[in-house]
Image 1 (cartoon, rainbow, N blue to C red):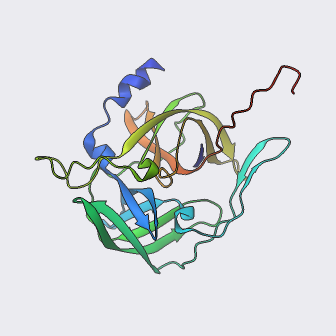
Image 2 (cartoon, rainbow, N blue to C red):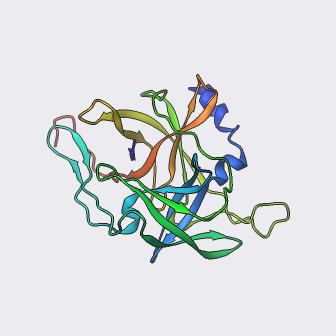
Image 3 (tube, helix red, strand yellow):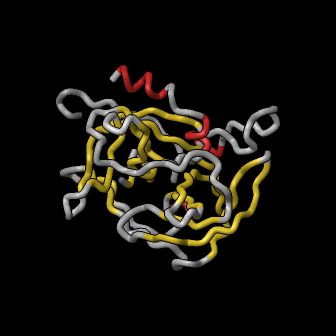
Length: 231
């Protein structure tokens, strides 16, 4: 899995509250579904963060070469900053149109930020990857294969669905030309629909969950068995 940016950690996973999970929403753009997560800005506005490729952009991605695995983005949104995007979110047992506008588009990453009119559903996630480490457990949250846990008809539950949680290990870190971590290689099982969801790790120094990046893509495992001689 590519993210554009111990036993104890297993116990920590049990502490992730429903409000933390509910900050990740299921979105729909045209005929495809994906994941997005909320962030409350300094202006108190509600923002949705997701992956740019969710909007079916034209892109070129270099997954691998003969020397090392690479993952380079040349994505560009078919919208300009301030443009309205036809995005829907799922709650109350059905899809709803929302007012969403492109707020941020970084040509060097697979990240898009939308400014929306929807209220904060769960906790606003905290960002920061500087306290994440190689070999550390991590969790990604989203809606694989278009599935959801819809509890809207159960008394006492939120009208918003509860996302799925998958666990992985930070296998390697990728840096950009400035030496800043810009890519995480995660060893985990993932399917489509998780795109746009957050990669979360436990920051032991701050004793809180932090978002390290956005789920962007994956290389499917091939069912090929090689002998010791390479054949």
